[in-house]
Image 1 (cartoon, rainbow, N blue to C red):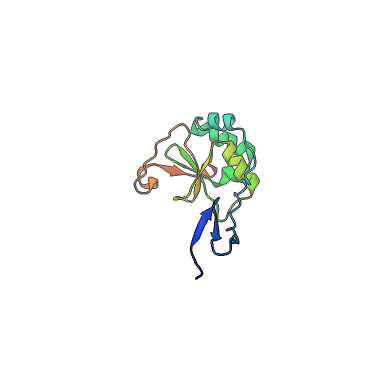
Image 2: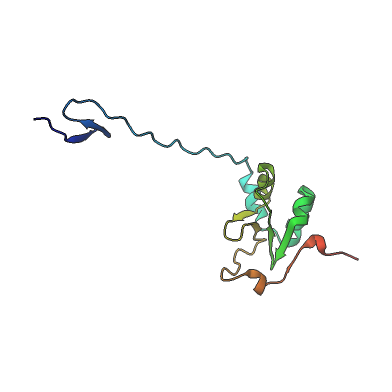
Length: 136
């Protein structure tokens, strides 16, 4: 009588009847990190900068990002219609921005690490686009 019992030997299923190892399942290869490198110490320092200094850095680094920026309370948000290029994401990360999946925007806390999490912050805080504000 043939037996159809299988046992695990060293993590591989083996048919005990004829001792032929079964095909090992292909383990998923670890996902490679495709992000460009950033200076984490400078990023940490940039996250504590006030709104005006972050806006100045944003304008200096990439004027297009400054034109997309929206100030909500003391935070700065940058939204895109589609995923930005890796170099743009690297620039934002280096300046201290982080991606908020819920709001679909890059956000900078400007030293204010607590923002209302319930509801839309636009209802509670003043919001404006610095590129739209004209200086006299």
